[in-house]
Length: 305
Image (cartoon, rainbow, N blue to C red; front, side, top):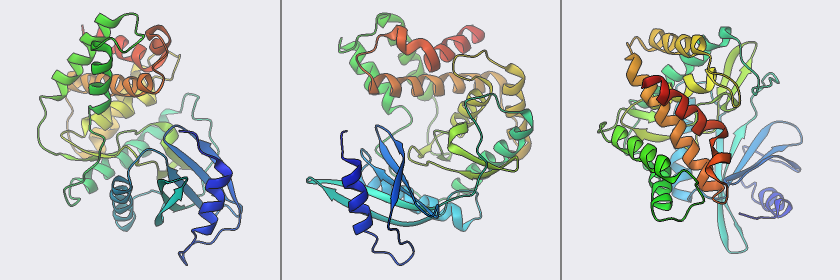
């Protein structure tokens, strides 16, 4: 969605109605398909403007983050919420306190020493959200992107060149996740390295709860996190790191995880992530789409086979 960033900044500065935050200058940090992120000139606040997510969904996210903060969970404190009206469109926004953190290149392989802190944070998140008041309603579901992509590919509205294989994989994912009923806890649903802030080797904050949903299994988060931590884009799978992450989560959560089941959840997570990517770039062929998450899915699939 195209939107004038300068107009957004002017609107935000005009909207600083809360006494908890006052800014005179905002600088763009991230510009993406789903949101725009700004930091104020004093590095005190982060402002996130949602381009796609509904006002109701953002308010649910705001309440969840406030709850996590109240429980001492390491995340960026959400201090205000609001909405902008620009050219007739409503854009929700949230304001967060800036979290002091180390500048780390998370595109590179991370040391095993950080796994314990990351797994501890994920286990703590699941413990807290298992007791969070329901319902936690979001437009996004665990398999909404897979549903959308399957419809697009099945009806020929896709440039995928290996359509039969892709349809088979998407159908597997829906059959797999369909086995799990009810609600286990609220999962982060995008628990990757670039949604973590570190300070002195420890997790200082888990950020970006934009995709958080009520899930029938917390293992979606665990499988995704283990995969992201052990398998960088364009690199080789590090099974030692993968197993180390699972073991660290088991220790933190005091729960045993079935080794075959967690690989299937990693497969599902990779395919769901790939489906979102492919939906964002519908003109790309599956060959281009293969390069990262779909490639990871197929490597795991071959491992299971």
